[in-house]
Length: 399
Image (cartoon, rainbow, N blue to C red; front, top):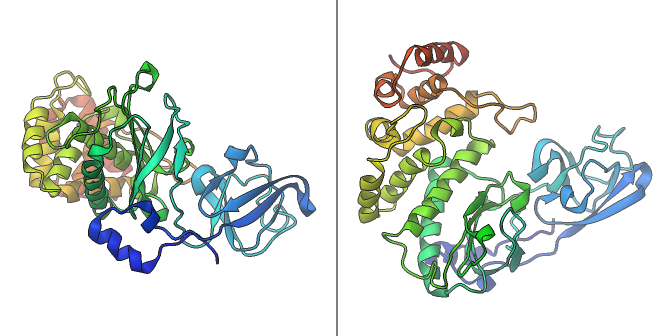
């Protein structure tokens, strides 16, 4: 099979130096061409696709239109975007996707059969909401890729690349894989953005079509010096960690969605995640700074004056396993919380009783005593916890 590959002799250089100029990282091989036809017997409108990674037919307005296909090599066809959902593997061309494999008018994305690793594009045109610049690749490692807009000062590149490389490596070690192509992370940094429409950060995961099925963080900067200084002790460091937290939350363990998001909102999960990340990377001053900041934060959800970090997350993190506890929570969700028929998305939000039940399973002990303090526990919450134990009996822990 001819595909985009990595030279073995440079793989060790990447791990040793952390990040190398892209001209030394990748050895580009040729893609192969697939032709998809609207009708059987290779007739009707057609689309030619150069296959070297996951390709969405939504991008070429041909999703759910294929009835026959010519392939020179093995491919996998999927009925959902970003190579998700039901799939079928084709070793040879077929003139009838209906009669032969029951996949007529179902193909929405396509990939090579074997593990694939494509070089990051030299430039990417942002097409996600509120973003529309052409971004240029400035650094590429085996697991992280960084893009800048034309206005940014490159003095901060070393700091960003080092933090992203170490952080993403730790995340993959703790929480597992985040998609194909070595679960790479793409990070976009802007400076001197004047438009209010481009004044916020943005993130997507490998489940999202708008990011071309890549794990992606996009950070805005309002002046020329944005992102040009060391990250330690800055809000910029916290912003990157915050984005990483949400990628973990929304796409870990091969499932898309966050059943907990409507309970903890935008910040509480990222607070304990960031504390753990700084601790794991040995960023002692940032860990202490962050702890002092978030331990006094209070929220009005799920009840007024809820101290998510100091009353819930930090005590259970400290006493019941640290990062292992956080990871086990997502493991239990992946194994037991209901999914949509497609099989790769969670079907609904969870209630507070289910939330405590699943975290108790992760801790292997009943955490209700912490919930009593943290969430102003009452009869309704008690009933939800009781029902959660009945609904999810495989989530076990000591009382």
